[in-house]
Length: 229
Image (cartoon, rainbow, N blue to C red; front, side, top):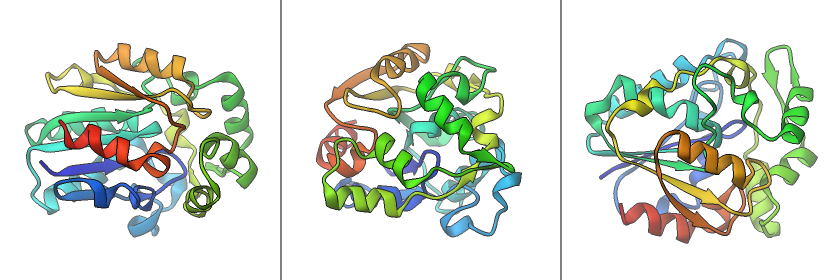
């Protein structure tokens, strides 16, 4: 039961580094285009389809099957595209405070209005660049000093198109079980919007008291949920 981890916006595969040693099986943390192992890709050209193809390429290169596919935050709109491309390889989907807007809308249409204003102000020239102060407010509200440093050190620029592109959620209509990990102390994607996302895709819900970067602040709790699938 290998775990394939898809990060959210302004992050890379290394955001999972605290969690991965706690998982019971093989772990593949994917770098989406424009960061980490795929940093050579121009962020201004990246689409949601490119993100899904990157995940599929890594899964196929490692020949993984019976996969638990995990999407964090904005990874919630990459996950259904991956489901559509390789449904036969996926056993279960886990959504960690994942953004799931209405089908054929934009990610920006689903997030909290105050957060949306900050995000829109941080977009220029096709790049979404979040400053340290904004990142700290959205991502580190429940983190101690060491955890905050870990998180902020991993924040990177991202492709604006991932926030403004119309999403295709048809993959969520496939009969693949899914679990939504609802974070009750999340200042980036508020709990009420998480509830709507979980309902939208018919996911089972597990709630824990944590902020948006729960895989850093309470990795043991996330690992317990995932290892128990």
